[in-house]
Length: 124
Image (cartoon, rainbow, N blue to C red; front, side, top):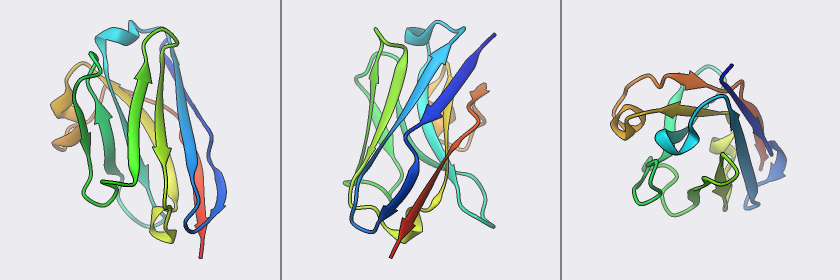
């Protein structure tokens, strides 16, 4: 059974930082590209960041570029999202996703596997 389990969300003040984690099981982690998406209240789910299986390509949404870093540890089957300089507009449920193709993440596709999400709230 494939599972993606996010953690690390919470309430933080504007300007603060959070590190989200996504632990995976049931898939060959190093064969999958990983991504983060988010959905704010009343809005569509949107792409945040993605990383290739080989760890050598990353993509970021313009809205988070320079504030967010995606990374992965293939030995731990885990992907991370370090978020700094958080803004109230970053308030959303953050979802981890896995797909064999990186383009699926950043080009409007729908990844194969999704986690249940972790909530991030940024107060002003």
